[in-house]
Length: 151
Image (cartoon, rainbow, N blue to C red; front, side, top):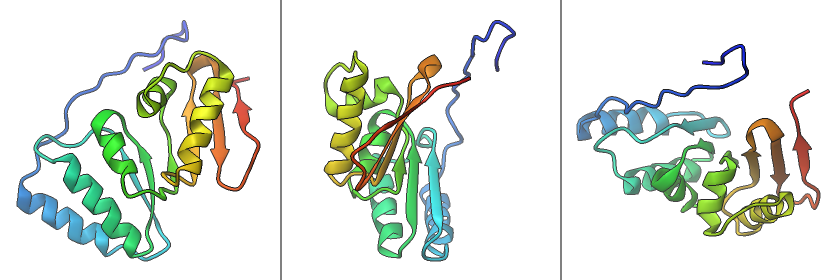
């Protein structure tokens, strides 16, 4: 929700709990996706779903040639990066700071941290959202970073 003042309010509520059987059914459907397709994983993990299940799911779909895009946070984001080679990961500055375990106070700090994720093989592309400052994008095999700002 965005107010006329430009302030943004976010309501973050836990998702529905998935049973083991429901997760298995979801996994079967995801694994049936055509190779080369993109699977977008965003938000928080449903209650009761472990980070290990997320890591295993991503590894399984990647083995089938399905590319993964992840926009999550905390332990789920860490777990999603474990298999490596994500097509794209979209942390915000605070989430990226937690991933690299240091403060990112300057634009060069953010750029360097995004480059580290790409060089480590965790992700082919990284887009870091920076609130009103815009976003930074870094991709594999590119030495340059791009800053995008809202007009």
